[in-house]
Length: 335
Ligand SMILES: [Zn+2]
Image (cartoon, rainbow, N blue to C red; front, side, top):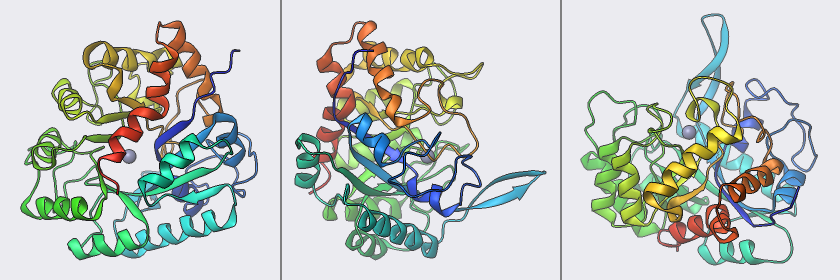
């Protein structure tokens, strides 16, 4: 297979969740991150083969849970848990010379264009629920946080989520939190947010709207995917949608393949242009859901690039999807 060697930015991976839930929800063994662990979605050797240059390391506050006879997951949005995740990322980065924490745009840019391989990790909080007031965001910023997801699947005091029955958009506290994010240089991530939330954040900030991990509702009609109106806003804002590899967001009916995933990419490209497409795999965050067949681990990403070339995309289009679009969007938020 022809190797399309482009740097990759992945806008969403739950690396700390994998270590903190001790493989309860991810079936592969719990091993150090520099080992090429079989079946593990990602690790340093696989990043090297995929030419991954930056990953947004998500902080998802939750605990393994037991319900109706099966092991599941409980959303537990407490600041203590957030701090444990941040510590874990810090220790992970400190333990491996190939990893770097990304706290400003010039570090990110250097990583993407460098000849030598290093992977940047940018810390992102998935859901602002644990933030008590805007000063907490300032503390988290000092600990390295640069991406703020406003909601997970529940409404919180800042915004309505994609699962809300009544879409009330941003709250007054949400506006204050976003103003603080703008002041600090923290990128707001609207994955899991409602349509009105997305629209109001755009009007408030006029920044590129980032939805780190989702697909197109037109192809797979689930709450977590984006409808046409939201895609239009992303397009007007010159933002990005990170295409996600989680099976239920790719196809409802059967085992999802790379061809099924391509349908989302082609739909978005044909209607809104290639400039809003990037990658947000959600590796390690799939809990007990499947990943698209053929992309089970990040080092298989070349198969995606190859299929896109066969669909008529150019190498330049692939560079945009792999890293250029994400860089452009982040540059507008991060200092
Ligand atoms: Zn998520």
